[in-house]
Amino acid sequence: MEQKVVLITGGSSGIGRSIGGYLKTKGFIVYGTTRNLANNSNFKDFNLLELDVRDPESVKRAVAELLAKEGKIDVLVNNAGIGITGPIEETPHEEILKAFDTNFNGPLHLSKAVLPTMRSQGSGLIINITSIAGYMGLPYRGIYSASKGALELVTEALRMETKAFGIHFTNLAPGDFATNIAAGRYHSPVFETSPYKEPYGNTLKMMDEHVESGKDPLLVARMVFKIINTKNPKVHYKVGEFMQKFSLFLKKIVPDKVYEKLLMNHYKL
Image 1 (cartoon, rainbow, N blue to C red):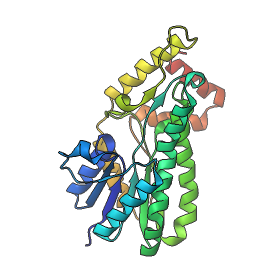
Image 2: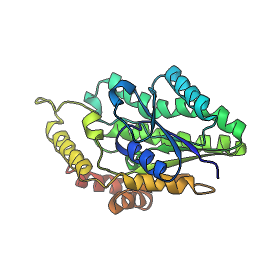
Image 3: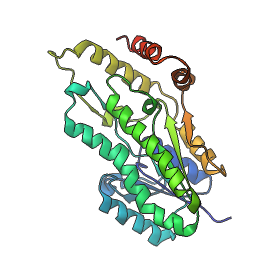
């Protein structure tokens, strides 16, 4: 059987690195991406391409390089993303735009770049890594929730638009996993004079604890492998702690105000 070629954005660390390493052990030809190849000169897990998901020209160059080497692309995993926290009122708008540029525009740039090739092949799979946070407006993480929620919805549309070409789109929403996302995210400072000082400070601490105690990202890698081997992938997949996934079930069955109260109690607001 011919080896499948997989491209994973944000592949040099965290969830992306776990996905790439696991798929390589399963016989896939794996390419990850990083914004700076020079900073990853000792990276040996799998192939790396230099790519900035925020820059359409960078995306085109990297995809062209991959196609020149392999002649095809079977699977795209849009994994690159950044975290952002803070009271929305106090979050600089340029940081909001940066978050959407990476978490929403980035996957669109990549999808647009690979779709012509997948269409000519008559096959292809695009997995967008979103977040369980994208299913609800979380306090002090509202911009992150919105960027991932927007990606969930646009994936639903792309899925219908490209189905006739033999291309499959799907969402995979992880919960909290033990990665370095907390170190790399933007978070608004906890200002001494801010009316949000106490609740935001407490929530920020809770979010960091959740990531530190998160599950092994290998679970996400195994789910990606399962999706790749599914003939007709579902629209949405979730992977994470039972309570995180259960919270989505609750959102469907309880009144909005009750769910809001549950969230506020959880965050002690």
